[in-house]
Length: 253
Image (cartoon, rainbow, N blue to C red):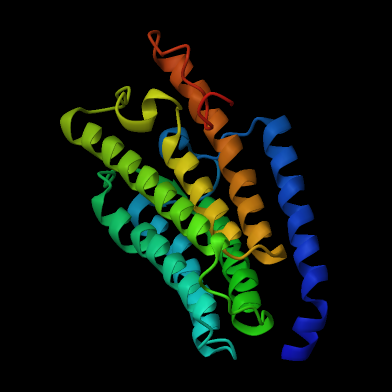
């Protein structure tokens, strides 16, 4: 089974990449608002608690990728260990810490959305973990790619977490939604998404290959349409929304 997967891995990844691009095109042109968070609505199946759904839909990514590295033939590879460690740090925050901090106990999301994210994270965790844990023979740890990529990853993670902190603090002080103005919210409507894209761009720079590229691509394909929907929601609900504020990439988009 392992040999079959290795021999067909690139073809499977290419199919996954094509699916990601197709999903992006569909989301952009259909203008569908994925119904969770501020866009949550009924009509997409049974509703479940936000924090509960968030934990389970992100959980596969936390477990699958590091497990494949830990139990694969490359488990002692320094580069594989570094990649699994920073991946785990990101998803430990998303799976364990973030759901405990969000103040959305009365909010729900459709179970169909949680299940789609659950299976999405299974595939992404598998493709990235299998390549790093079973296929690669690259063990070069200390080079320019590693330093630049790790700095990018940490920079993106700081932006991501700081943006989450700003949104959470607003929920503590007021009911409903309030216009965020601090941090990278001065530049874009969705700095948390911008930060996450920077994280996985750094991950790709550390170890450039088809698997890490596919994960970066899927991240963009998911988050850019979502950011456009967020930006349009802000424009619709806040008459004083800053005209100079971009959608997701400062000064660009």
